[in-house]
Amino acid sequence: MKSSGLPGAAMVENDGAAFLRAVGFALFLLVVFILSEVTSALTVAMDSTTRALIGTGVFFGTYLLMYVALVAFLRWENGGDITGLGLQFEKNTTSHLIVGLVAGSIGALLVYFFAMYFGGSLRPAADIDADLIATEIMITVPVALFEELSYRGYLMPRIERLSSRTVAILLTSIWFAVLHFGWWLPLGTVPWHLILIFNFNLFLGGVVLGMSYYLSGNRLWVPIAFHFAWNMIAFILFPVYPHDPVLMPEIFQIEWGITTIPGFILGLSLVWVLLQEIKNGK
Image (cartoon, rainbow, N blue to C red; front, side, top):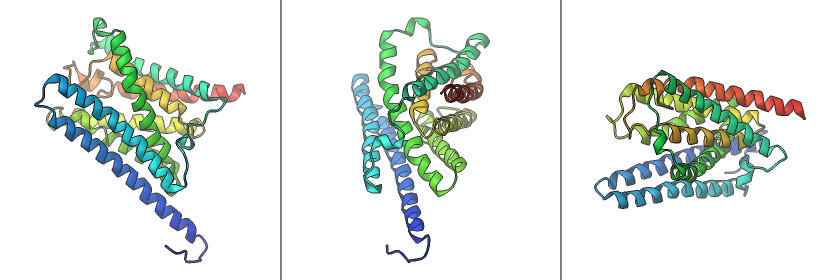
């Protein structure tokens, strides 16, 4: 496309290209997750060992594709690398990781304490062992890293450039929630009111992670660590719903129940307070 020579024409062209790339990347994520779900559905008739092997391959393959796509889209733009999305190593990187780990853990533990004291379902203590923890670490590290790179590192700043920071946080949070559709498929597995609560909770989680990115100076360390800590507690201390039956999931089940809301609010509040403490301590 040739420039019209008018003031701002280059910016319009660049913004248009940025919009197409953002939409293209968002749709790529959708296609990847749809293919993941289709593959899982095709393995239903297989034996458990084969199904587990294919499931593991699909899981890691999904996040490998996300990484490859990020590299490709960055090269398409200007030849930038992954670190430019908010993974710069700086003197406050360690403190940002600690902030995310503390805030994510305490927020998720609030949901846990609601369930423990008021009759929600929790994972039996006998089931929590070193193998479970090691497995969850291997799963949660790529989830937290590549989802934050994709949603908060790549998509959100580009949407902000085209609109505003608020719109960027909201749109990426909506897409973040939508692309977790695999948890409630096939339709009928989970009641509609639970699907609505789940999607709202994931949207709210996206807002928390997006605000954490901006509060920490457009860096991903806080949201990555928050995401990691939250997911670790969710999978280790709670049953995996809807795979496992639980009591009153709309109230107590993490990410499916309304007690998740104060957990996310507390987590975001801690992010803000702790980052302010770091800033004031300089």
